[in-house]
Picture 1 (cartoon, rainbow, N blue to C red):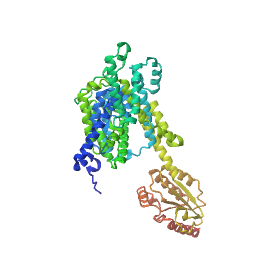
Picture 2 (cartoon, rainbow, N blue to C red):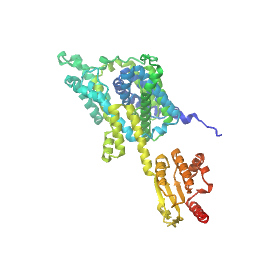
Picture 3 (cartoon, helix red, strand yellow):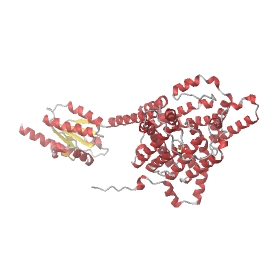
Amino acid sequence: MKSIDFKLEDVFAPKLFQTLRNYSRAQFAQDALAGVIVGIVAIPLAIAFGISSGVGPTEGLVTAIIAGLIISVLGGSKVQIGGPTGAFIVIIYGIIQEYGLAGLTVATIMAGILLIVMGVAHLGSVIKFVPYPVIVGFTAGIALTIFSTQMNDFFGLGLTDVPANFIDKWIYYGGHFHDVNVWALAIGLFSLLVCIFMPKVTKRIPGSLAAIVLATFAVWLLKTYAPASWGIASVQTISDLYALPHGIPAPHLPSMELAEGESFFTMVQKLFPSAFTIAMLGAIESLLSAMVADGVIGDKHNSNTELIAQGVANVVVPFFGGIPATGAIARTMTNINNGGRTPVAGVIHAIVLLLVLLFLGQLVGMIPMSCLAAVLIMVAYSMSGWKTIVGLFKHRNRDFWVLVITFFLTVIFDLTVAIEVGLLLAMVLFLMRTNEETHIRTFHNEIDPNEDTESNLNLEHLTIPEGVEVYEIDGPYFFGIANRFDEIMSHVSGEKYPVRIIRMRKVPFVDSTAMHNLSMLIQRSHKEGITIILSGVNDHVHKQLMQGGIEQQMDPHNICANIHFALRRAADLMERMKGES
């Protein structure tokens, strides 16, 4: 019995401890600058994501601080910046609407545990294989949903009971657009223009930060000095709707208010699909961010360590009132572009956000809600991936329709349904393509070996003995192909070809369905007086056939190393049959 050599560093090896071994002052200077800049960039985003998720500015900042710190310290990427992201807004808002903050806490902790299990189980590399059309589909759907949730604040409608459903939401908006607050709309449009044009002026100052600073100053100025008749006081700010951030909340257990007759376990069962969605979304987004970062800095992240770090962050954050967090592509790229090359930059980014929470709470409260809505509209635009969608639309192949279906499921239903159906569609698409790539060919008189080679050897054709038929399976021999092959064999007359050679030199693996069908074929052929010969079986497939009991059903001489031996064996069998007759 082989011993299992388990090494902790294969599963959990934080990059911080590796980079600190040869850390220098010069690198610290670069990381410090990058950390400060990315911390400043994260301020408006953390606040906006917190508010749009249905919690508040403090919860958004707390999540960015604690999750950002944990992900940087324990993560498997040198430059990953963690925190709340736009992708979670839809799912968080839905959970709060249905189960309240306690439900969100339970779902987030469950998602964290799932992420840790994924990392320990070495599933980091598997997550990377989620098809790109699925990712683009639900990301674009999230972008449209985020855009739709900002209309209330952007136009200053002041609605408090906006429906969660996408279609109902727009119908509700349509009935209240006559209540547009002109000042709020003007501030929103101004902020949107600053976000759009600031990068064209300078890339040193993030457009979202410039928009918030300028819009907040303008609103303060107008509220202080403009005549009351102007109506500027009607423009809502963060402090009008939410308690101002004043520090890190003490860790606490959420108060669980269960429905009558409902147990905690029942609630966990109901929340599991949402928790799974949070975990999958967090895993996909964080590993996608890490992969993009690898390409820029020329490094290789540890995907399993990254998943464990994401999991720990999501288990810890809810006890401080925070929301789900993951790696953020935009903030990670900001970190890289400003010189960040180690997790120290991420730690400094968390410290910057902590200082904002401790000392600038009053200023945060003065930010206009329509300005935050403009920032999130720009986030939605960046997430939409419209160029990719246009590119796929030109071809309109299966990938495009997987994207479209995932997109509409995200918008019309919810993210949980979209991810589940999207992954199912991706698997079906993969099986269809694999099925198409596997070919079954039949040979009766001769085999031309030159068909499968690019050499100019002009190999001699192989003659197939009379009464022998050769079938070649080219590709994986799994359930789809197994059933097709079984149908082909069932329609062949046993009287004409007493010997059948199944050529398997290009079969990399067989599954249980193929094994079962092959076993049934051998049994049926034996009853009909037909001999089955297997040719070119590789070692891996041969081992599978032994484990499945196929070898016990056949004469060992009928499992041949190559087609030459198989044809010779078939000729001998035909001679023997003629002699017996």
